[in-house]
Image (cartoon, rainbow over all chains, first blue to last red; front, side, top):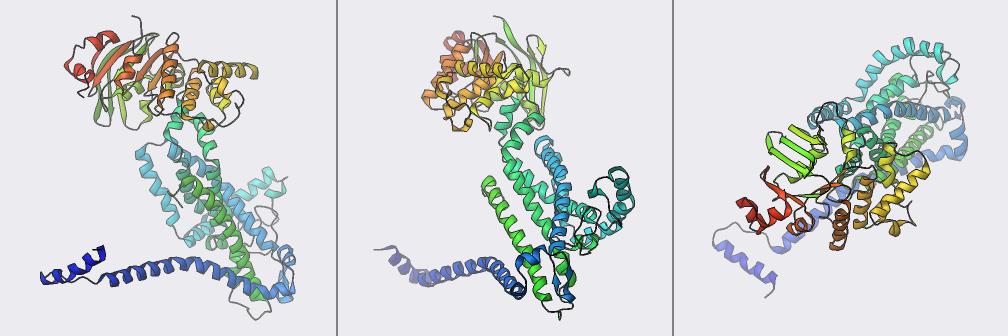
Length: 332
Length: 251
């Protein structure tokens, strides 16, 4: 007698004894199959969505590529849609300037914070500090933007820019003809604070993968904690730390609202950190939906979105792969 | 017997749990002292008070004294890195540092800037690899990652790394528990050789290993030292009921 026979024969008995009836084996199997497939499809949706969005953007980008070569668009420095001039370079340059300044400002303190939490802090301190740091990530972007306008922009315009001009004025990077405070630096500072909790969290996780035994092996020969960190902990986790920073950078690249509020939004190629800039996300957010009758304007803006998406996707995939290899399944 | 380490009224706490209770022992110079006892009795904890590793754990508290050559290593003005340089540790399983075989041995010497020239470092690395019987096995691949060695070789490398900073005392925290029988034997033989020059303290789970190694025995139970003395006396004529039970395999 097979197992199926047993299960099926039990059914009538169960009903006789007044127990609730159970659906037949066949119907339960059908349910199981349907449930499995439905969940799979729902899980697949976000993946399909990314492919669809990328494809749709590429298609809408296409018309302008028939008029201008990709190189012309990417390297062009003049943005005058009315005259049919679509140079993306100011926006691409602006995006990278703000991101590099933001990441550059964020990385040193974030790395030190993560090192403190993982190597020096007592468990109780850590339990208090980590949630507080994570809280930074919960503040809405627009609030950071307002904070930037109210606090950072005046600080940069009134204090930092004049001071830098006086002391570091001979370096072109630190002077600007018209420093109003609305600048790459202001955007970078706001971005740095925004991505900090993220970089700290990833770096902390990466540092936590170093086994205690390895630290003790170094301490046991009389190394100090700091020597152990430099020679062992950082050496062991370098790829993960870099990947964490790159992942932070992808957040910075796409961050729109807060940056848009403090960078000035002038389509020019910036030459100094006190210059205004106009990053790609701000371009799209500010202009999409208006003046759409201009020929190719729609294609140009969606082209900007396409470029942004491709840059972020590439950064993201590479860093996630590195992190997955380091952290196993603990963190994705 | 000349004591190298003297422990006086030592108590240790993890949070509120007391894990060592009023320990008073003396550890003889240039002999192998074996700490035995059932799991959880505080053997490893006691060992870790000797190189001040216990304080790496949150919420530990230590009272009393551990004197090495008459100097209390818990005194305020003692440099903990000097203590650990002088007292090497062989851990439960090998932890090769993420660098080459050569760099592993040179690591501690570099940290303490013990040598003046590249050549001196090279000679010293070779010497300690020879002492631990590794040199012939690895001399052609000194620059390959230490993780490429077998587990047994790794443990000998860790021993070489510890010896390279010129300690006087070697602590072993069940140093063969992760190794195969042949590698374990190798480590045991090394420890027996090294006792001519070093004071060695080994924690072990296995009674047979204790009998093979010990010149001096400390038997612990529930955080207390029940019995300590020369190996022959303790093994042949234990004074305490529980020690006898342990030796006869009842615990």
